[in-house]
Length: 513
Image 1 (tube, rainbow, N blue to C red):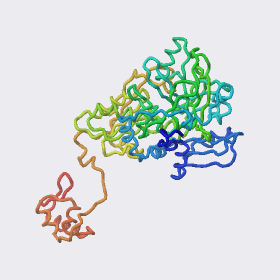
Image 2: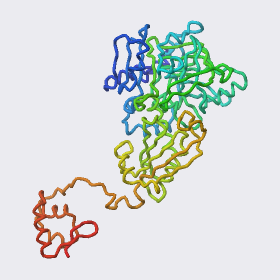
Image 3: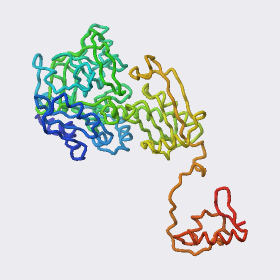
Image 4: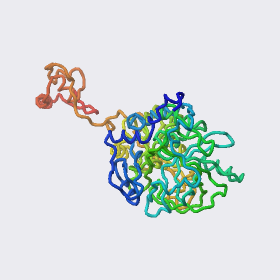
């Protein structure tokens, strides 16, 4: 390795090293026996852990799945806690770090380069993920392209449906930067160079999906990593890709347009996406580490919260939502988008209201933050929005349907949502689960807590003497007497009742009459 690159740790953000960390944290199941590719999907489906297959398929390849399929694993990857994950990401996204280019002979991803007929998609451990999928899919690909009009690098995350040894369908139906870039190339009748990285650090995937203003997305990855991304020029194009990834599929999208059938495929909404017409990716080369670890991601099914895509989508939606809330309300406290809804449809917001109406402002901001967000639940800061039980309690006790629901229609929607029934626009609902403004301290909204008596020496003050200084709760009478029992206080109060000297105020405190 040249001296100028000797200081770069090419393994620090390597997927294979992260897998070792997951094992140390008890987040990994390692399968050492030989496993046919037809069994991989079933062994990943609903599995609470990441799974490393040491001998997948007839080639006995190393394959990992579910590496990003829990918030804890994503937090481990970024070196932070689960509750601190969003604040850490927001800070890192605001502080991009420019990439550093390395020579091809220094890049681990170029240890092996296969070009032309030697490059074969069917030689990779690609497996059928869902029973009705159109073919085996490469699901963990991060696509790198460059907008020729701006020169900016665009990074996204898309699947590839194998059509042959050197061709694959790529989904460009949904609105995206790559769709727009390809659309312009298609209009000019030009192929578009694209590089698909398979086996990247979760920081790279998170950065690729973050909806931020156009800019240097390679620097954005550096920001999320907290270190400059080492990049290397592809073997067959001028595109720059992470030099420390496991593998890159170099190729181009042909200019024929949305001309080839792609799908069906089990989608991130939990149902199948129908057969579509899409462009075709043509493979020109495969560059990889000598001991490359192939990656697959889970998507769809009945256990959405245990899929890679739902967890990544939840973070993406939380980032967009938080940025919208920052301008809409004065003090957002927390946001949570549940992975079980696919990571985009149901959003929870906790805020500290300073003026009346901020809950409605938060709902409006959430509606506009993403086309994916359909249902918004806004709570006060005392509710833990990561807790299903606390949100359920807030819905049960702080919500009246005829007063606290906001319903609006005609919003841009994601066509994959089957509840749209073919419509292009959809409805959204906001649930105001906040206590009426200014009433959070009212007794009817005060949450009961176990009594904690003041830790002071016994003062031996009788109840009548304590009440002479003002109204008292029963606990305060116990504190005045230094009682750890309370029953003797009841006997004192009994005598005061009998004398006609004891009453209660509207807050339930005892008073001398």
